[in-house]
Amino acid sequence: MNKLKLKKILSTAKMEYIKWICNARMILLGVMVLFIHSFVIQPLQEHAMKMNSPLNTLEPFIATVNSEVLVIIVPVIFLALFSDFPKTDGNTLFSISRIGKVNWIIGQILFAVYAIFTYVGVIFIGSVLPVIASSFWANGWSLVITKYASLYPNDSQSFACLLIKNNLYNQVSPWYAAIQGYAFMMLYLLVIALIMLVFNCMGRKIYGMLTASCVIAFGGTICLVKMPCMWIFPMAHTSIWLHYTNYYRKPIMEMWKSYIYFVGIITILIVAGIKSLKRLNFDSIQEID
Image (tube, rainbow, N blue to C red; front, top):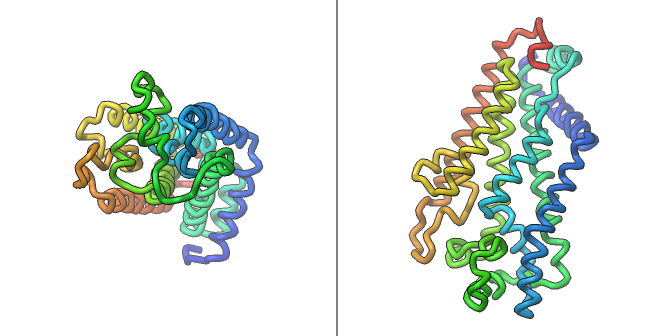
């Protein structure tokens, strides 16, 4: 029962993914896209029209995964979409006994990866499509991002001007920022999902939600004030601009160290989840419902 079976793992992930996509809570994903359009895309487009200069196509997405506000909202919406992960009911005991505990939990992790890739992918598409006809794809920052604040100093502290900080556009290219931003956001959301999975496997589902919420809330608050301990939390590693100073090339935190951080945390959570599931008594399946 505990032998790894790829077919069973893929089947579990596929079944959970289909149920997730068909869940009524997916309307929150539409709300997320509308929020991005209202608070990121429209303000940036207004700046572009005011300057009569195009945006880079990737800049709205880069702004979304680097904004001090949106980098909190994106995981909060994901947490709401994933609040019942892993979904357990009266059929869970039968399913686990049929495919094995290890196959089941790896299937749940694979489903989480599918769902996270979809979630971030929808945000990416929703950020890019509205500007694709009036923007450029070249690997360079637009004048809207780099020059607007100096041309219109009265607006320099507006929300739109602060979406992409000079820590970012002075240090890395848009393509690099978009790729790294996509990857880091996926890793951050996977950490959130695995926290819930571990506590669920311990029979303490509510504590998983509370812990994930605290990681988001405390991480966001500490990053806002830029305390040195912010690097304990995944949110700091997700925000590329926090890795750099305004002008100096030497980073505050090397990007490869952030990847090691995420790989380490994810590995620990996966091992903890498997060990917890093996010890969990399924005679009372309602405890994890």
